[in-house]
Length: 116
Image (cartoon, rainbow, N blue to C red; front, side, top):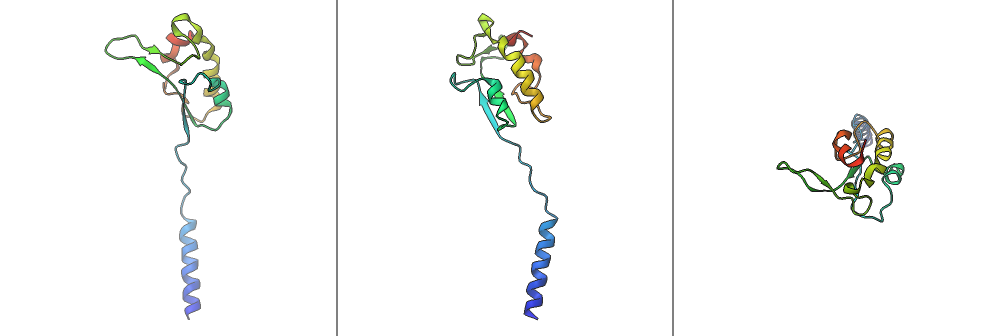
């Protein structure tokens, strides 16, 4: 009788576990743009290690100010050298899941910085 009770408990436990859904976590995010030696944005996206790639960093924004992008040596927005990221951003967005891989949800918010 004790064996039947243990077997029934085991069977019910297995049945209960079979109804549980595995968790799909939110994915791994990376903060890109504040280390000049971290490689290109395209390289970061192409690793496919990250679900979200946050492009950073606005050093000034809000209160009617023009946003100032600081990408730590990757480019200089005032010199127009950030246009190199336009194609990289598009490529990253195509290679990602449904959610956009950038902190800025709409590409047009980057247009003053990337030139397209």
